[in-house]
Length: 209
Length: 209
DNA sequence: GTAGATAGATGACTGCAAGTCATTTATATG
DNA sequence: CATATAAATGACTTGCAGTCATCTATCTAC
Image 1 (cartoon, rainbow over the protein chains, first blue to last red):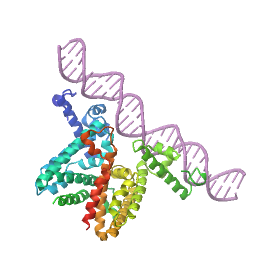
Image 2: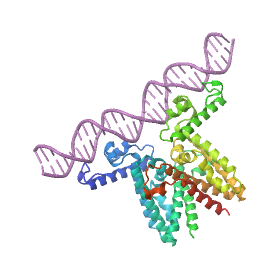
Image 3: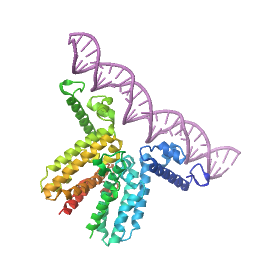
Image 4: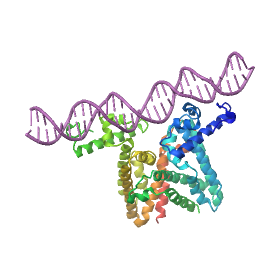
């Protein structure tokens, strides 16, 4: 959480990177503990142990901060998928997004909130990173199923589409109120994500055969 | 825009409904003209010709207002789909969501923004309405393809999932900045919605055969 | 027509959070 | 140690959502 050698200011690039990571970690922790509603820049600053102004030395605005958190989460998801064997591919594709905390809720907000508020420059960087990750997933699917990369690229895109949709529904199921009327139980069902996205994964992988 | 008989106050239920519709219409117009960024309750009030406080007599908060606009749009979409014949079903399923203004952008924000901020009561009403519409679509697909309703219900659900995802990507393509770097052109391509959602529709309808 | 009652409409006000920037001061350098 | 630098600060500005005491259009009873 603190800088090396108890520095109070980050001067070197290494120190700056350390502080940046501390900010990202604190943000992540806060979202996990209290969700997005109460997430204020002041609160994040308090958690890191710096002032609000300092946050703006590391991100141009709140959304850019969240986008950075998302990028890390996405990297983790892809790394998990890359560990899949031919046998476990389908399962991993479904489990990985659900297992990385915050990935789904942030993905759900990616286009509506995060990308809307971010500078063109940051947006482009992000898009390139996303494309890169999509390609890595296509590569994994190609390797494990013996399908030419050309075809798995499209599969990877369709999966991303379905994943986006499933992330939205996952969000809806987390909004679960105290007493849901009986007739609406299924609409708030947990595990909605794995069920719905699992269907999509199976559909797509079958389509490759 | 004004009440019947130049009334300045809506006393009867009819008058109240007229005012409510005027508010929804103004909201819709404003979003179409200027998007969501500059959409403030003050601005909406100005457009309708009432004060801000009045808006809160017709919706408990901003999101509830937007949810009402979404509901209307969704109704329009389903109505369009119901006009489809057996031959035009696939095309209609893709065209309808794209043809109703605001439907896609609002759908993209449905779970992240609108449903988050709304009272349980309103949320439940909305969920029931959504379920009803899903059922109507399932009914249409069943009628036009001669597939038992039991199976088209699942198809309708999968389509909703894909539609959610496609709405997100559609949003991303609208954020198009001035000069997109050449290597990113495809990521901001227009018509992304019809292409991607069209794939999903074909996939699902084929699966019914 | 008038008086009083009802409730729709108003907009100044409050609260809150994002984002700014003049000022302060930790740290590096000679 | 003196000086330069740039990292950190937090009081301040801005902007919007939402509230509520007050006002007044409209209805009702006579």
